Image (tube, rainbow, N blue to C red; front, side, top):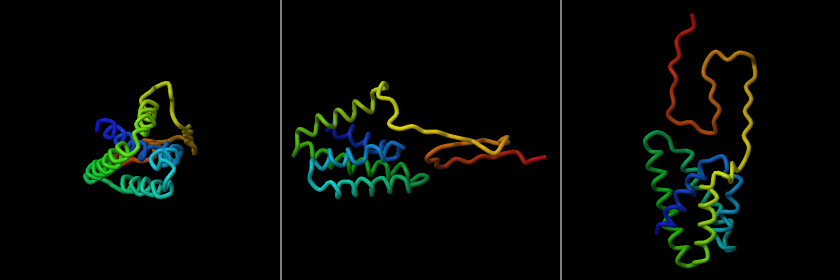
Length: 136
């Protein structure tokens, strides 16, 4: 139960991260155990789409629901395939080990001269508002 919960939380975290495109195929193969990889990949993408489309107060509810869905799936998989436990532990360890470093590189460039206001560069921002003073 604990492993499935940790795995589901890590999976949801990966789904909304920039690393998702790099790790999705490996996770789909791990969860499918060489069976129906395309279906598992589709299910992962559907869950990710739900997470990315959610905004405001519903975002938290959807994240909890998606995590619960994957927790249940992981529990079933772990019971059917005990060898998955070791693969899942390795995934969790890789995500928690600082030496592992980022799964990809991000390069940000600001061009066009002087910026007279906040500059934010991010993959996803939700519920953020800036109130800037009017120009004089």
